[in-house]
Image (tube, rainbow over all chains, first blue to last red; front, top):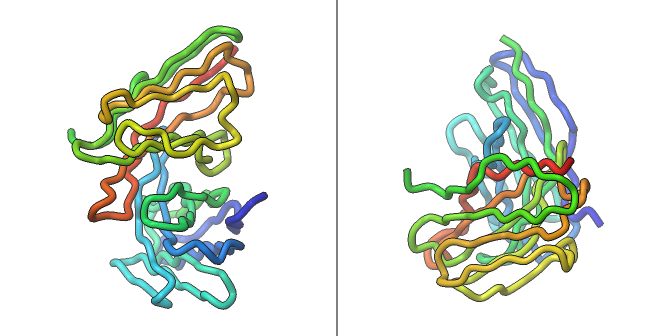
Length: 112
Length: 114
């Protein structure tokens, strides 16, 4: 049972464009929603995270939008750069120390 | 380097052999997690420790898998009688409960079973 669904599977964006990745969750007990960035041969690295009491969080070029009623959240990468080319995973967790449940990932390629 | 470290980074083994991986978490991180990631998929939870106590194991963790964290510091993950389906990246993450939600991941151990 896939508790966090992620789309699209892959994404190609021109340099300077906006990359948008979407996730939907099923378990209403989730209360922490991070996004991870992973480069080939490396472990995932936290990019940005949000709690359900806010609808948007912005850090630099990265923004999370959160829709609690729809049980959806998305990552927006503004002014996408070739160095952003990586695989992005959304995740969800039920409490501060609980395991992460990951989406299936989105492979982003930013063309120069 | 004060991040999470894992050893070895790569392991090739023949089917039926036993393998053991090691994870050294960030100092003073009391939570330690093991995840498995197959090609094109997100990491899947295997098990986690709080200090030396193993608090949860996934149904993915068959009887051939065992994990330990004997002194609440480093952890080992052993796979006995490896199968080709065990081929994956094994990721370790650590977290300090007191002040952070963030799990810091290590670089992983890539296991190939031939």
